Image (tube, helix red, strand yellow):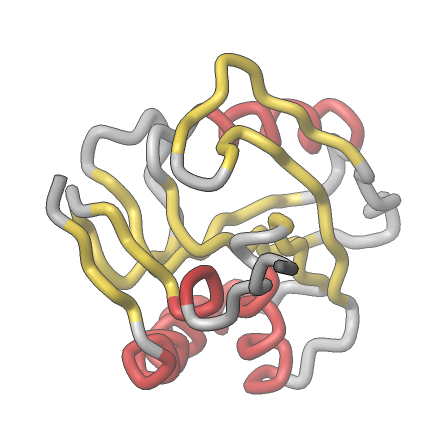
Length: 153
């Protein structure tokens, strides 16, 4: 499988583009998919001065391999928000995001949700409302590979 190292400089440039194309949604809040969306949602919240930033947890990968089941937990209370921008780094298979949307739409039927990502794979089951690049490569984000805990000896 082809890999792409995604540096901070690349991220900074693409984040600005994503801010520019998604700001028309005028979100009341951001919902970051932890952990992949945390860095991006932080950068976007700074750029758009959005202070209503929430997280939701989903686990569908263990480091590099997709798991058989998807866990979604720590769902914040979003009922007071009309428009929420969901932010993640990439839509890969789309299975996780479909589950996230299903849960959020059930819990908050009066809230409009849109999705913003840096990357999405053409084979994904869901296409983001806002994205920068389409890819079929494995993306190695700088926040995943540049800082590693060294094993104790």
